[in-house]
Image (cartoon, rainbow, N blue to C red; front, side, top):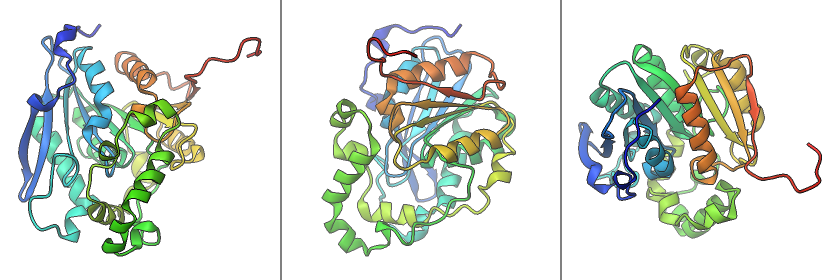
Length: 306
């Protein structure tokens, strides 16, 4: 069983465990690294989604540190505290550049072959690439709200195709619509500020969305994943169709899918249940004979027959 650490070491002030690191030339990111008192030799690498911040995983980080796991994560370049300190250029926001960052983070902080990757949304693609490129050092993979095993394509004909100046004018409306779409739980939605939800300048987010090109990330590439994989998706996710996640479950041979009663922001929307499922996955062997689990965080009304 994982070792426990005392509750007083699990304070929510993460800042004293953060460090500004030049992960690559002209790419400074704020890295969070923390080992519990009785480190159990396994490191968890967290990769957040586009526009987000590593603190979207705050509940999972706090919970899993308490289980004895070392945690490494960062705010992606130009996200959160990893502010772009040079004049931004379009090439800086491509998926290829973020992949190099993800690999550098892993290579720099990897201590052994007992590593587990946990990604949300855009971060699941980064996890998939790191897993396949460093498969001898990755033990398990957790993908939240990641979608199907399909190549990434730029969003050239969406809202993000608008000029940056016009997009900035619509920022308040974009934030409001995005927040409504991300959460299923009204309580969890109200607990997150707009700046926490979208931690990147809107013009930089535009470049991220237009730069998400990954032709190699198709079914064949995802089928190469050889470690156990936990897939989590919200039944009320307005960005990820359930059919896509089920396809992913079929393509990855050693995968199990849990469908939760949440929206796209599962790490926050269904925090307690996500923590419970991830903990079970990390400490137990994967039962690939039971590929699909449907879970609910709401109790059935009295008198209702199951």
